[in-house]
Length: 637
Image (cartoon, rainbow, N blue to C red; front, side, top):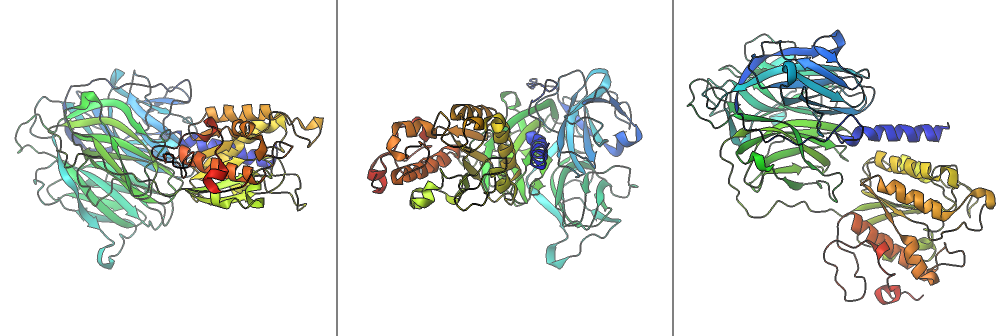
């Protein structure tokens, strides 16, 4: 195996970590949430280590990917129906994900925790207790790859009505601490900060729901929260791996009348937002604010959708029909490898959004964020500052009246102007040779076309007698997040036996560059050209079959039938059926522009014919007749 192939395999393995709980093996199943109606109240516990794989504590590993955890420890009530836990992955060698669920059930399509290689990550969740009073955990990369730690922070016990233990949501989150304000100093290493109860929260409140953000960490270390004045237990809610990181976590914090204490091991600027609280014994008895648990249920996954959440955009997420009595939703939202660092905010749909965050993500990383958010009759809004693909999983809800909507339309998720990298060989270079750049429209294009370019194998020499960098090499050297779309129009010089592998490797390299959508043009010929001789195996019909089959396996790749268009416009190419004359150069530029508009869900940059419509999503240009470039652009053919 050569070095390029090794890198390609590494790229493919890294991308597997981005699956974020998608069913992709025989041991992960789809699960539908039961229409649960049983309600429960919250009993906070002093944070307690329930399982620690490093010490062989509490984690019963059933198979290489499955483990069970007993709930008969840490003072968990015997009648508890679900528990609130924080799950931490410690120093993983590979990226991955895991999901917790009731023992005795199948693992749902959802994610409790996601991580990238080398990053210690933690996330809180609420999981129903299953068979033999145990909860189960599925981990896609196996329990031998890194250690898992589980801390229990509270339990829910059955209640039709209650005084203590009912959740009250704040209309908008309240910021309790921001050490950056007025030139403030970061919390020093090995320090504890006292966080008082926010105004309006009764002194007998038993717990708060809190969003904690560490800003520009000063080194590796953990963060812990516990009731004010109580000795710090062995538990954590957030981790940093090195200096300069931004890390966020939401959790449920037990409190006293003095609030809670926040400990930082390594030091960092700190932001603390509170989103709600749990009542004490002096509260009125009511059925509002009680918890209804469900096995994790995926509500939204933007990856197969045309649009992610674009920068400063918002998507709306509906709750399932059986959650009609939900006043606040408990979710796990995963940010999937954003192009730049930034935050997300979950809030009631069609209601003004507050100024605080629900989670934070770094470029190229995956981060799952626990959250408790008020919901409206329209559901939830998920806002992203920097833009990202997300998955939204429901783990339960609190009962009560929903927030009324204040507008009739959903929030906007405007599509920014797309940044497109077009990689090709001498077939694509016809745009340069014929100066058809003006027909590349509707996006910002970086055209990189070189004669003799191949996909993965070392390229032959072109017109300048210097081998062009391969498509894989171009993508591997592309800074992460610079482009939204890549267009591939090359491969004519590749040999058949390795062609399908080469296509898959280029797709993996594009993903590793943070490119969300891949446009792949099929070859314009069905048979091999005059290059390479019989030993080259350049049978383009088989090349096209490989392109189509690879595209059919992934939602982020689409094969566009350039060959179909050229067969209807043979005058666009020279006698070899590949290289473009002036009309063909304008035709392929127009084709690429339409393909980019189609795959990104936008209107066509030009009508199909003069005076034609450009509203709605641009149709796939490979399914339409060739455009009349003379009528549209005034190009003589």
